[in-house]
Length: 367
Image 1 (cartoon, rainbow, N blue to C red):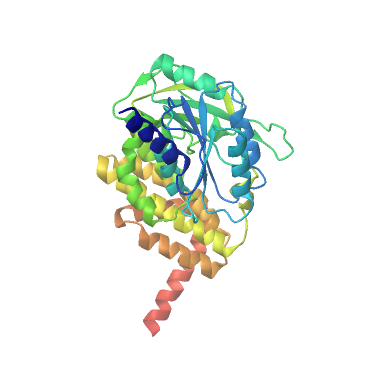
Image 2 (cartoon, rainbow, N blue to C red; image 1 turned 90 degrees about the horizontal axis):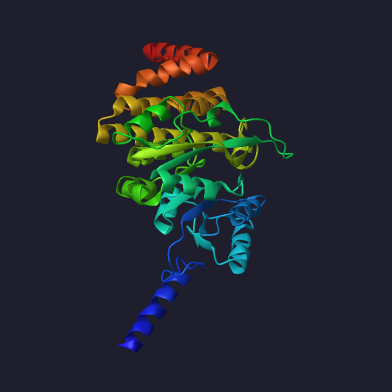
């Protein structure tokens, strides 16, 4: 019997060391950590080391850092391996190929072992005590979700203030919610940020969203806008929340993906539009499944501003074709909202689009 137990323990150890062909630092026979800090990264070589350093510097040492490489082609993998070799709290995994942010967020839930999950973008950083403060607040109030603000940092490291979308409003104590409806209402009203970071999530509650989202994430490579739709499902599962009023996170506004805003690169802009379409339809599916279509519509509309900016960065012919696809991919009952928002957000493009549409119709009539 003693020999059998030793063999079983050895199997557990080996299984914990080899997941997706990558080494990890957490042994399943050990007590699970309090918090899993999750970093999903794609080509993050310039900044990911800083993100991991900020996670390792937490005053709460009972953590794991789950690093998921989403098919990087730069030196990211080597950096992750070096950190894992130095600190057993760093666990590294790989998607093998680029699968997109939504897929990676869901994989992080599956790979984490902490009681709570905190996401960290590979080009951002945490303040040293945010895990200790947010976890303590969650335990004291029995909250499923802890919200905290973020400082907006310029590339030279200076604080440029807290942007409006990162200013939290709400209660300082845990609030009983009716199936997440209150959180979704706050989210739709921009009182809860659209990002997965800036929050401490109950892993147990997050696991409830996997059956609905994993099949979608397996077949759709969605990155831009994916956290907007992800939050529909995730916030719905949070039964109560608590707010920490001051910042726990440094958001670098002009790093990584955000540094590409305004680019005229057609392939990039086109991918952003496709991602937004997929994420919007995922939000509509949430509305159908929960009976909360009015809220789902408001949340889907959050993606319009960014999507329309990307369309406006294209040439006129490319932009018209992209907007046609947006309308064709949008369920009929939601197209009016899309058109109205385009008219408000990008009036000059909307006018040109309507003129082009009328010209095409006249041409077709003559033909």
